[in-house]
Image (tube, rainbow, N blue to C red):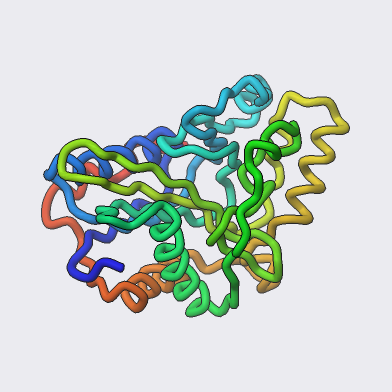
Length: 261
């Protein structure tokens, strides 16, 4: 995909606002010529619900989120709501060149597949593209994980990784920000607890997530080793793309979360 030297960041656990603001900042820095291509891995503390760039929060039960300490944050990318809980999140910031959105999705997915297989999970890529305009009209489609787009990663037909992408066309060219959730435990299904729909619709969302998604912990029947998984994902990009990674040479403190609870 893109050989050469990249920055690698593992920023650990951070608030939703930190995670999304840093992703966008890294993309804008690459676009204005002051940054470099980056692979970042991170987690969320406290748990957070992120909504797509244009998605309203009216369908969320904001009082219950606050009572349970669930952050709410808007992503710089599109898509639908996600409860970021038991997951490892990846973020890729790079120049797109002449590659289409789907070509970039496919290339990043191939690197993730390589990394997951090194961890011991054999996965496949979704080949079809759903009619999102039709699906989004149903309340049960609120979760991002309610359907799989083309080149998203599945295990035995159930979604394991969900991703979203945005292009930044200003400055130094067409820059891609793509980030996504690698599900490591079943807690993402609890999104159904934090929507403002009636009980029947909440139950429908929960059943839909149970039927359509899977997580690495459930596949293995054991807790995920996040350190080893991070190493495998990084190695997957090195093998698939021929890139080499280095840590930032200066200013590393700007990539550390400043507040977690």
